Image (tube, rainbow, N blue to C red):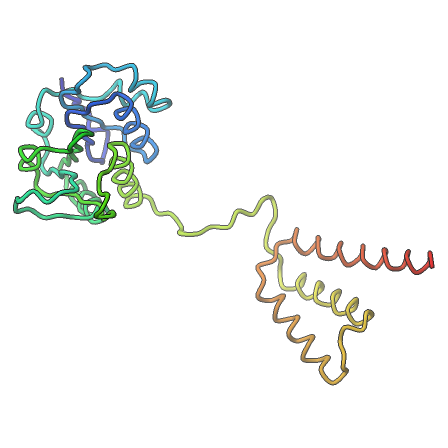
Length: 254
């Protein structure tokens, strides 16, 4: 059986002789997290379809329904122009070894040129066999702790899928969640500074008088550095007003 629809410009994720249905399901979830939906499965140990895979896949069950089932690695990559093999071990084979980042960069270029790319992932116990790796054009190796380099099948698919998504989706490295507010304009910062100066002056904060101008300048500089939102400024005005009311009430009580 072959998955004839390549599903657009993306690589095929090929699970070679996977042993546990749960790991196939985890791989499907990892793929769909990052917009990949072309899965191929080679000779799964526990047969196919697999209910444990379906249960683990959760909302990504569609990938399992549409997955291509193949009897051998050679059949699974027969229509691929370029194949990567994921491996944590050097196999004594002469071929390029790339990080996931570089491999997905290369994959994007290949697909843009109209080529079909497949990525091989080995079974959980020992990974891909040399016979599988020898059929690949290049290897993908994740830079992990050399004392514990084994990656679970789902983890390996997740890392590769993430790098693919990162290559094709432009995402800002950092954004600010505004929570129904917005950054204030300079005039509002100026008014907040005026309010603080007034209250601090009343409290005798600017002492001695010879240092008052420098202290006020430092406060203005601090307000300018802070990325204050309208909610922040309103809260600070409210705090100052409440402090004034509290001490005025306390003084009246005395």
